[in-house]
Length: 293
Ligand SMILES: C[C@](O)(CO)[C@H](O)COP(=O)(O)OP(=O)(O)OC[C@H]1O[C@@H](n2ccc(N)nc2=O)[C@H](O)[C@@H]1O
Ligand SMILES: Nc1ncnc2c1ncn2[C@@H]1O[C@H](COP(=O)(O)OP(=O)(O)OP(=O)(O)O)[C@@H](O)[C@H]1O
Image (cartoon, rainbow, N blue to C red):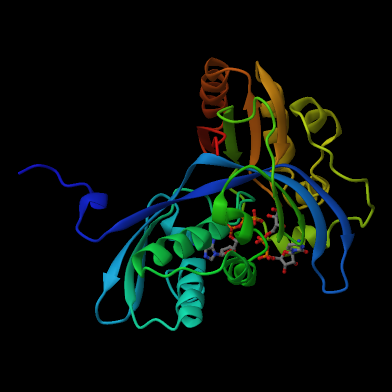
């Protein structure tokens, strides 16, 4: 009997929820609605969670979570996959149900937008499964109602993001696509709201990122200081990454605690991953590349 892969099962569709990485994140001001106005260059990793689903003829929507980080998450109505499915079904007035299975490969509450990527993947998957088409602006509105990072995760391509996360502009930076990238999470979950709350409200200036050098030299993550105050181990991760051979840049992503490093070569990436794993066997360390899309 041949082994049948899950994605080969009749009627089952699969989407990857690509990890989001903020190569730079400039916080410009706190808005009256409590959100912050940002400027951020988003890239996406080839690594991500996996979402599979097939139609449930009884009209129910169900979710099972499995994989390395499944124990950190509930599969109930607060899961962003369920929220996305309910929001989409409400919008299109569908009677169809779906049986969804999320393989949680990315650490939770870790600054690489796992929940946001899952929500966007659920929207993409269910639009295919239920055969619905929605105007792009409406889809972006549904996405934004699920979280500030969700609109950018819909396309999961390199883009400049501003507003609270809803103003998107595709960006091409020479040399970035396919670049070897290491993601390192020291195992502490941090709350995004708490980290934004710790920002010192000093506007340090706009983000200009037309090439990698400018991004390295003038780019920042303004949430690094408040995140390090909550989780000092982030400093250890950053200094570990920066001391590796062949590092083009190393910085924290989003509100932390995951940090990333970009490498000039695959060989340097592998060497860095090996040495960091030896020194810190309890850290989550993922070797990946920047998605070329
Ligand atoms: C830090 C980033 O990941 C950078 O990409 C995002 O700005 C956060 O995106 P997210 O996790 O999708 O955030 P949301 O779920 O919308 O908001 C969580 C909380 O973060 C804070 N928040 C979020 C986005 C934003 N532009 N300003 C904020 O102040 C708010 O306190 C909000 O209540
Ligand atoms: N499918 C999901 N995956 C991850 N987190 C989820 C999911 N559903 C709900 N959540 C909740 O959303 C919160 C944020 O999770 P997420 O992993 O997206 O954070 P993050 O990586 O810090 O996001 P960001 O980079 O946008 O700040 C967590 O507290 C988690 O409990």
